[in-house]
Length: 252
Length: 173
Ligand SMILES: [Zn+2]
Image 1 (cartoon, rainbow over the protein chains, first blue to last red):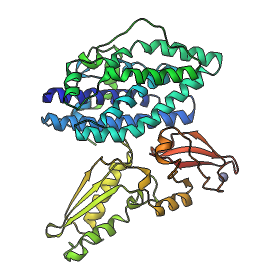
Image 2 (cartoon, helix red, strand yellow):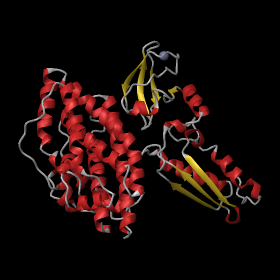
Image 3 (cartoon, rainbow over the protein chains, first blue to last red):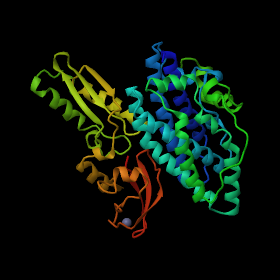
Image 4 (cartoon, rainbow over the protein chains, first blue to last red):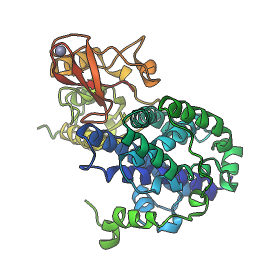
């Protein structure tokens, strides 16, 4: 695998973490209860921390002097390689937890596999992150169960929430040339092979919640591999990157 | 404040460790970095009055890590080292098993339940089994988790069913 592909592979991982971390940070001060406000901002902090480590590593491999800040603040929307799922707006609390749960289960499988990456720094980041992701996955899974197996209203909201994001999950298991090269080099993960583990964990939680697997037939891809994003990412970046855009090179 | 460079070689490593022993976690000030187990190595080069400190982060996004790094640099420079490098290494990943016995006791006295240990602790907790957490106020083991996320990345929120007090639990990772 060439250097560009290696960097791209790391950016895809980092972009997932930063975009979802930013989304969760939007809940700060707005969550339905204090404990969840604290929980979501804690998860955001873990994800943003993981993104920083992945970006720093990508910048070092790239060798062009870009650091974590340059990667986070100075790329335009077409250069972002996060999956479409994580950039979807927060919606209500059920929407946020449905999105989080489907992502956490996938992220857990991805980072488990990455602990064996031949890229030693990536393996170290993964080992660190995996412990944190274990807590994230349990937290979002608990909420899918509580809302799904809760009141009539909470159940209806969780069903609607899963329907809204389910069509973004196919993208998580898509392998393009970069993913294949990363896999061949022992750096990456066989995303297609993770699908049964993801389906089984998601299925078990849905069953406990008394919910059916959504039967949506649409599926959208292209964020992770091509930078074809929904309109939501541009607005998210406008806020995330505002300071560096308005006051270039500002520092504090 | 001592601004004179250290010249006695015998003092080197010991002096650096002695200085670092006083540096505390900015979020849980009763714990020193030594109690936390985040300082992995200290290498002193007396000839150049320099010291290289290797630390490992507790959580990927823990905002306290940056403050710890600044504090380490500040203390060592005040102690006379002219060059201080702080390197962050991720592997092996920090675990709550590295908290020292003293650190665990200090946490308890401070009102934070220390992380579960051994059987039923560590890995088992990460896999989803609930640990037995004793209330730091009254010692009762009849406690209940309120949230797995607390006021800092390393803590969970609990409530004691015996004395009814809420408390922080330093969760296993
Ligand atoms: Zn008690």
